[in-house]
Image (cartoon, rainbow, N blue to C red):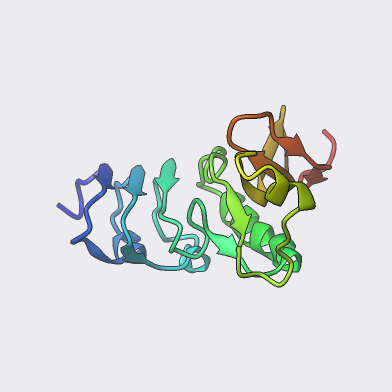
Length: 167
């Protein structure tokens, strides 16, 4: 199985536990989707040049450091966090869209967290998080930005921090 498995999708299985990095040396694994699994752990900083050599698609739960929906404690952590993921994306054999569908958030328990005054006056304003951040692609360029995420209204996007130089 280890030498032939190409795609693995596990969703909503509360009895599954372990570290996603235990699959890092599966040489043919192209797609790893771990969705809504509370007991999968790990840290994307462990993904090196030889880890997941053929990976094209990945979705990790929010309790994995770097997983989709992961929450940082300080706004100032975002730059280093993105730099870590960007370094993985730039490894020679990585698929260019890796991690680009992820959103990450500022934790509600962060000292940087705040709620606007109108949130109390309009409790059904459908604001999910004051801040999330994600990758942005424009042509061949890749950057990242903070966003103000709303559930039923358009998001407010902030300035893009470009990672790639102008072509």
